[in-house]
Image 1 (tube, one colour):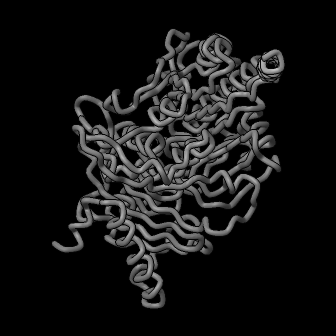
Image 2 (cartoon, rainbow, N blue to C red):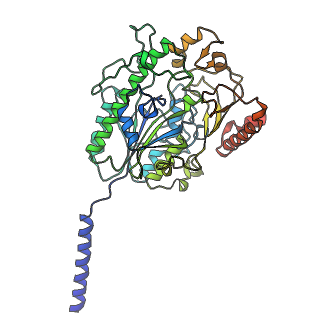
Length: 489
């Protein structure tokens, strides 16, 4: 009996010692996620080769992470693109074809489970700050909506400071912070004291904590898809200023993460929802509308300061973040609808493996699907973009190309159209921009500005047919309702 008691006492003592050791072991750091999404920024940053615009904090993040040189949104419209970012599904599947505003009334289907909901299931605490622009809220449910900063979503420095307490208060539970600015979206009225009255891109008020960086219109870089006019230069200078304000907000947020000892264990992504808010970019699926900045900094990277040519799209974002959180995207294929289980696969896949590779194998094509911007802007386009070619299918090619109201009213466009349809807007004739053919095929290696349409060239007939077959298969596999046009036209 005495021997039994001694053994029992020894066992209890060993168990107590092991428990004490467990308590003394340092906890594994929480694997956090910050997704920093800006509104209407093109590839305008120092790390993307622009020597004029000042983005030191984004450049520093790129040096500590990976710069994606071939990252694409799938639809060049704010609300629609954000639904793709947060679901991993193209709009023609998730149902948010365009703007969420009450008078447009586009919203995501109730069969969809969004990124914040998945991460909540994985034990993450989730919060959002700034621009939201998706619906319904029960589909895109976050634990907390952080508000109250000065300057609203135009002041990313104040936004970052407002997130400080939420970041610092719980260091044991992993977090997902969805940080969305309204810069550099057009807005804030017009500059009455300038000869061309550029839209101010939010540069019409003071922002606490921001040191405004202003630019001389003579110094800006005019990209080839825009006209080199005084009006365009004045607007680009305003746009640059807005981007530099974003950069300061990014820098402040990174500092807060470092102050909280959370930077090293946090996955940080910087991206834009769609291209710059000028005709020729935003609302189009030409390169300036869909080829965008993406900087990713992961705690798991073996190499830093790398540039990768992996072709990724915003459908890949949700699977990537879920994989980082330890969830297997392939196993998450069902959602609930009225008590039923509905199967759907993500349209994208995790690109975590590409962060350490300059030329990863198997990342050589992306697809895009755009249908609406505003409710009056019906112009469905479907795209396949490979390493060498880009094929655009304009499903409503009989219609003139519709304009977003702010783009149409911009001084840049209005100055250009005064010269008539035969005039050039950048390198493209204005008449060709407004009235487009059903099929557009471009050799991106020889014609990166997408001017020489090869769709009617018999030398490229086999290339066109192959891309058309791949695009149709994509539409069928992803449940695109517009696939009926193949049968009825």
